[in-house]
Image (cartoon, rainbow, N blue to C red; front, side):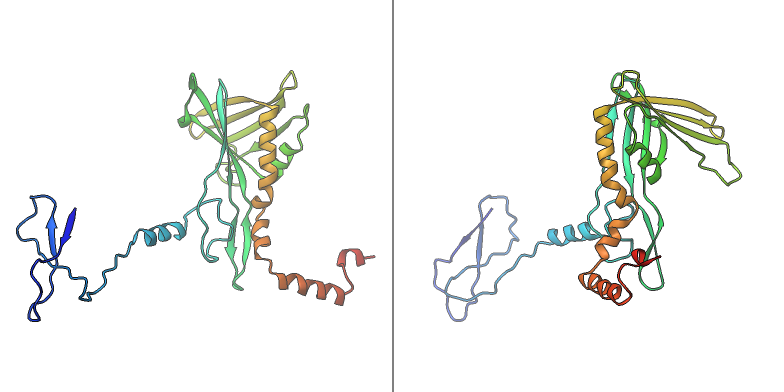
Length: 266
Protein backbone atom coordinates (compact mmCIF):
# COMPACT_ATOMS: atom_id res chain seq x y z
CA UNK A 1 0.00 0.00 0.00
CA UNK A 2 1.13 3.58 -0.70
CA UNK A 3 0.49 6.53 1.63
CA UNK A 4 0.11 10.15 0.53
CA UNK A 5 2.30 12.57 2.50
CA UNK A 6 2.17 16.37 1.98
CA UNK A 7 5.38 18.39 1.84
CA UNK A 8 6.32 20.11 5.04
CA UNK A 9 7.73 23.15 3.23
CA UNK A 10 5.28 25.61 1.60
CA UNK A 11 5.05 25.68 -2.16
CA UNK A 12 6.42 28.68 -4.02
CA UNK A 13 5.01 30.14 -7.22
CA UNK A 14 7.98 28.82 -9.17
CA UNK A 15 7.45 25.33 -7.92
CA UNK A 16 5.06 22.95 -9.47
CA UNK A 17 2.97 20.96 -7.00
CA UNK A 18 4.12 17.40 -6.49
CA UNK A 19 2.76 14.37 -4.73
CA UNK A 20 4.91 12.36 -2.33
CA UNK A 21 4.01 8.68 -2.57
CA UNK A 22 5.67 7.23 0.44
CA UNK A 23 5.78 3.45 0.43
CA UNK A 24 4.82 1.53 3.51
CA UNK A 25 7.58 -0.98 2.74
CA UNK A 26 11.25 -0.47 2.13
CA UNK A 27 11.47 -2.55 -1.03
CA UNK A 28 10.20 0.24 -3.32
CA UNK A 29 12.73 0.88 -6.12
CA UNK A 30 14.62 4.21 -5.95
CA UNK A 31 13.39 5.14 -9.41
CA UNK A 32 9.77 5.38 -8.24
CA UNK A 33 8.41 8.84 -9.02
CA UNK A 34 7.20 10.98 -6.12
CA UNK A 35 4.62 13.72 -6.25
CA UNK A 36 3.10 15.95 -3.62
CA UNK A 37 -0.54 16.55 -2.84
CA UNK A 38 -1.97 19.94 -1.93
CA UNK A 39 -5.71 20.18 -1.29
CA UNK A 40 -5.79 23.93 -2.19
CA UNK A 41 -4.50 23.39 -5.71
CA UNK A 42 -6.85 21.92 -8.27
CA UNK A 43 -5.61 18.81 -9.97
CA UNK A 44 -6.95 16.68 -12.77
CA UNK A 45 -9.42 14.06 -11.67
CA UNK A 46 -8.36 10.53 -12.23
CA UNK A 47 -10.96 8.03 -13.34
CA UNK A 48 -10.71 4.28 -13.37
CA UNK A 49 -12.79 2.40 -15.93
CA UNK A 50 -13.47 -1.25 -15.29
CA UNK A 51 -13.67 -3.26 -18.49
CA UNK A 52 -14.83 -6.43 -16.76
CA UNK A 53 -18.47 -5.42 -17.18
CA UNK A 54 -17.99 -4.83 -20.91
CA UNK A 55 -16.35 -8.23 -21.24
CA UNK A 56 -19.25 -9.81 -19.38
CA UNK A 57 -21.80 -8.16 -21.67
CA UNK A 58 -19.94 -9.38 -24.75
CA UNK A 59 -19.89 -12.90 -23.37
CA UNK A 60 -23.52 -12.71 -22.34
CA UNK A 61 -24.91 -11.50 -25.65
CA UNK A 62 -22.49 -13.07 -28.08
CA UNK A 63 -24.29 -15.23 -30.68
CA UNK A 64 -24.48 -18.86 -29.53
CA UNK A 65 -23.61 -21.80 -31.73
CA UNK A 66 -26.34 -24.28 -30.91
CA UNK A 67 -28.85 -24.36 -28.10
CA UNK A 68 -32.45 -25.00 -27.26
CA UNK A 69 -32.59 -21.72 -25.36
CA UNK A 70 -33.05 -19.46 -28.38
CA UNK A 71 -36.54 -17.93 -28.28
CA UNK A 72 -36.18 -16.50 -31.81
CA UNK A 73 -34.86 -18.03 -35.03
CA UNK A 74 -31.16 -17.78 -35.80
CA UNK A 75 -30.24 -14.39 -37.22
CA UNK A 76 -33.29 -12.59 -35.81
CA UNK A 77 -31.70 -10.01 -33.55
CA UNK A 78 -29.95 -10.43 -30.23
CA UNK A 79 -29.61 -13.94 -28.88
CA UNK A 80 -30.73 -14.74 -25.33
CA UNK A 81 -28.46 -16.51 -22.84
CA UNK A 82 -27.75 -20.19 -23.40
CA UNK A 83 -29.23 -22.91 -21.21
CA UNK A 84 -28.61 -26.65 -21.37
CA UNK A 85 -31.17 -28.85 -19.65
CA UNK A 86 -31.88 -32.54 -19.24
CA UNK A 87 -33.32 -35.10 -16.88
CA UNK A 88 -31.64 -38.37 -15.89
CA UNK A 89 -32.92 -41.58 -14.34
CA UNK A 90 -30.41 -44.00 -12.82
CA UNK A 91 -31.15 -47.67 -12.14
CA UNK A 92 -29.10 -50.78 -11.43
CA UNK A 93 -28.91 -52.02 -15.02
CA UNK A 94 -28.81 -48.77 -16.97
CA UNK A 95 -29.24 -44.99 -16.96
CA UNK A 96 -31.53 -42.85 -19.11
CA UNK A 97 -31.00 -39.19 -19.96
CA UNK A 98 -33.71 -37.10 -21.65
CA UNK A 99 -32.78 -33.86 -23.43
CA UNK A 100 -34.82 -31.54 -25.69
CA UNK A 101 -33.48 -30.34 -29.04
CA UNK A 102 -34.66 -27.08 -30.59
CA UNK A 103 -36.49 -26.73 -33.91
CA UNK A 104 -34.73 -25.22 -36.91
CA UNK A 105 -35.80 -22.22 -39.00
CA UNK A 106 -34.77 -20.94 -42.42
CA UNK A 107 -34.89 -17.26 -43.48
CA UNK A 108 -37.21 -16.15 -46.28
CA UNK A 109 -36.68 -13.36 -48.80
CA UNK A 110 -39.35 -11.33 -47.00
CA UNK A 111 -37.22 -11.25 -43.84
CA UNK A 112 -39.47 -13.70 -42.00
CA UNK A 113 -38.52 -17.19 -40.88
CA UNK A 114 -40.06 -20.54 -41.70
CA UNK A 115 -39.88 -23.76 -39.71
CA UNK A 116 -37.64 -26.22 -41.57
CA UNK A 117 -37.33 -28.98 -38.97
CA UNK A 118 -39.33 -29.73 -35.85
CA UNK A 119 -37.56 -30.20 -32.56
CA UNK A 120 -37.31 -33.55 -30.82
CA UNK A 121 -36.41 -35.20 -27.53
CA UNK A 122 -33.16 -37.15 -27.43
CA UNK A 123 -33.03 -40.30 -25.30
CA UNK A 124 -29.61 -41.60 -24.26
CA UNK A 125 -29.36 -45.11 -22.83
CA UNK A 126 -26.13 -46.13 -21.07
CA UNK A 127 -25.56 -49.65 -19.69
CA UNK A 128 -24.26 -50.12 -16.17
CA UNK A 129 -20.54 -50.74 -15.73
CA UNK A 130 -20.62 -51.33 -11.98
CA UNK A 131 -22.37 -50.15 -8.85
CA UNK A 132 -23.67 -46.67 -9.65
CA UNK A 133 -21.34 -46.53 -12.64
CA UNK A 134 -22.39 -46.33 -16.28
CA UNK A 135 -20.52 -46.79 -19.53
CA UNK A 136 -21.42 -43.69 -21.53
CA UNK A 137 -18.99 -44.73 -24.26
CA UNK A 138 -21.47 -47.51 -25.10
CA UNK A 139 -24.52 -45.30 -24.96
CA UNK A 140 -27.26 -45.69 -27.58
CA UNK A 141 -29.36 -42.81 -28.86
CA UNK A 142 -33.01 -42.61 -29.85
CA UNK A 143 -34.78 -39.45 -31.01
CA UNK A 144 -38.46 -39.06 -30.17
CA UNK A 145 -40.50 -37.04 -32.67
CA UNK A 146 -43.42 -34.88 -31.54
CA UNK A 147 -45.87 -37.61 -32.63
CA UNK A 148 -43.97 -40.29 -30.72
CA UNK A 149 -43.93 -37.99 -27.70
CA UNK A 150 -47.71 -37.75 -28.07
CA UNK A 151 -47.93 -41.54 -27.88
CA UNK A 152 -45.95 -41.59 -24.64
CA UNK A 153 -47.97 -38.76 -23.13
CA UNK A 154 -51.25 -40.60 -23.80
CA UNK A 155 -49.92 -43.92 -22.48
CA UNK A 156 -52.18 -45.64 -19.95
CA UNK A 157 -51.13 -47.75 -16.99
CA UNK A 158 -51.52 -51.00 -18.94
CA UNK A 159 -50.76 -49.62 -22.39
CA UNK A 160 -47.64 -50.27 -24.45
CA UNK A 161 -46.11 -48.78 -27.59
CA UNK A 162 -43.26 -49.48 -29.98
CA UNK A 163 -41.18 -47.21 -32.21
CA UNK A 164 -38.94 -48.28 -35.08
CA UNK A 165 -36.18 -46.08 -36.54
CA UNK A 166 -33.88 -46.56 -39.51
CA UNK A 167 -31.46 -43.57 -39.63
CA UNK A 168 -30.53 -44.44 -43.24
CA UNK A 169 -34.05 -44.91 -44.60
CA UNK A 170 -34.14 -43.94 -48.27
CA UNK A 171 -30.35 -44.12 -48.57
CA UNK A 172 -27.93 -46.77 -49.79
CA UNK A 173 -27.29 -47.93 -46.19
CA UNK A 174 -30.99 -48.54 -45.51
CA UNK A 175 -31.54 -51.56 -43.26
CA UNK A 176 -28.01 -51.65 -41.90
CA UNK A 177 -28.98 -49.80 -38.70
CA UNK A 178 -32.19 -50.73 -36.90
CA UNK A 179 -33.42 -49.20 -33.66
CA UNK A 180 -36.51 -50.39 -31.82
CA UNK A 181 -37.80 -48.73 -28.65
CA UNK A 182 -40.44 -50.68 -26.73
CA UNK A 183 -42.36 -49.22 -23.80
CA UNK A 184 -44.24 -51.93 -21.92
CA UNK A 185 -46.02 -51.98 -18.54
CA UNK A 186 -44.34 -53.61 -15.57
CA UNK A 187 -46.04 -56.82 -14.36
CA UNK A 188 -47.14 -55.23 -11.08
CA UNK A 189 -48.46 -52.08 -12.78
CA UNK A 190 -45.98 -49.82 -10.96
CA UNK A 191 -44.54 -48.33 -14.14
CA UNK A 192 -43.13 -49.19 -17.56
CA UNK A 193 -40.07 -50.83 -19.08
CA UNK A 194 -38.11 -48.79 -21.61
CA UNK A 195 -36.24 -51.28 -23.80
CA UNK A 196 -33.98 -50.06 -26.64
CA UNK A 197 -32.61 -52.61 -29.10
CA UNK A 198 -29.95 -51.51 -31.60
CA UNK A 199 -28.58 -53.55 -34.50
CA UNK A 200 -25.79 -51.76 -36.31
CA UNK A 201 -24.21 -53.84 -39.06
CA UNK A 202 -21.84 -51.02 -39.96
CA UNK A 203 -20.21 -51.13 -36.51
CA UNK A 204 -21.01 -54.77 -35.75
CA UNK A 205 -23.12 -53.79 -32.74
CA UNK A 206 -26.09 -55.76 -31.43
CA UNK A 207 -27.16 -54.46 -28.05
CA UNK A 208 -30.29 -54.23 -25.95
CA UNK A 209 -30.57 -51.82 -23.00
CA UNK A 210 -33.61 -51.75 -20.77
CA UNK A 211 -34.48 -49.66 -17.74
CA UNK A 212 -37.59 -49.75 -15.49
CA UNK A 213 -39.38 -46.40 -15.14
CA UNK A 214 -41.68 -46.03 -12.16
CA UNK A 215 -45.07 -44.36 -12.41
CA UNK A 216 -43.75 -41.30 -10.60
CA UNK A 217 -40.74 -41.03 -12.92
CA UNK A 218 -42.97 -41.41 -15.97
CA UNK A 219 -45.27 -38.69 -14.61
CA UNK A 220 -42.31 -36.32 -14.44
CA UNK A 221 -41.35 -37.16 -18.03
CA UNK A 222 -44.92 -36.69 -19.28
CA UNK A 223 -45.19 -33.33 -17.52
CA UNK A 224 -41.95 -32.19 -19.14
CA UNK A 225 -43.12 -33.48 -22.55
CA UNK A 226 -46.42 -31.59 -22.28
CA UNK A 227 -44.57 -28.39 -21.48
CA UNK A 228 -41.97 -28.62 -24.23
CA UNK A 229 -44.19 -29.79 -27.11
CA UNK A 230 -45.24 -26.29 -28.34
CA UNK A 231 -41.57 -25.26 -28.32
CA UNK A 232 -40.57 -28.30 -30.37
CA UNK A 233 -43.20 -27.25 -32.92
CA UNK A 234 -41.73 -23.74 -33.02
CA UNK A 235 -45.00 -22.15 -31.94
CA UNK A 236 -43.23 -20.12 -29.24
CA UNK A 237 -41.36 -18.18 -31.95
CA UNK A 238 -44.65 -17.36 -33.66
CA UNK A 239 -46.27 -16.30 -30.37
CA UNK A 240 -43.32 -14.03 -29.54
CA UNK A 241 -43.58 -12.36 -32.95
CA UNK A 242 -47.26 -11.41 -32.57
CA UNK A 243 -47.78 -7.66 -32.05
CA UNK A 244 -50.91 -6.00 -30.59
CA UNK A 245 -51.64 -4.20 -33.87
CA UNK A 246 -51.60 -7.54 -35.69
CA UNK A 247 -54.51 -8.88 -33.64
CA UNK A 248 -56.46 -5.68 -34.24
CA UNK A 249 -55.84 -5.91 -37.97
CA UNK A 250 -57.02 -9.53 -37.95
CA UNK A 251 -60.27 -8.59 -36.21
CA UNK A 252 -60.99 -5.93 -38.83
CA UNK A 253 -60.30 -8.38 -41.64
CA UNK A 254 -62.58 -11.04 -40.14
CA UNK A 255 -65.49 -8.58 -39.77
CA UNK A 256 -64.97 -7.38 -43.32
CA UNK A 257 -65.06 -10.86 -44.83
CA UNK A 258 -67.89 -12.31 -42.79
CA UNK A 259 -66.28 -13.35 -39.51
CA UNK A 260 -64.73 -16.72 -38.86
CA UNK A 261 -63.96 -18.44 -42.16
CA UNK A 262 -64.36 -21.98 -40.83
CA UNK A 263 -67.81 -21.43 -39.36
CA UNK A 264 -68.92 -19.56 -42.47
CA UNK A 265 -68.48 -22.64 -44.62
CA UNK A 266 -71.56 -24.56 -45.72
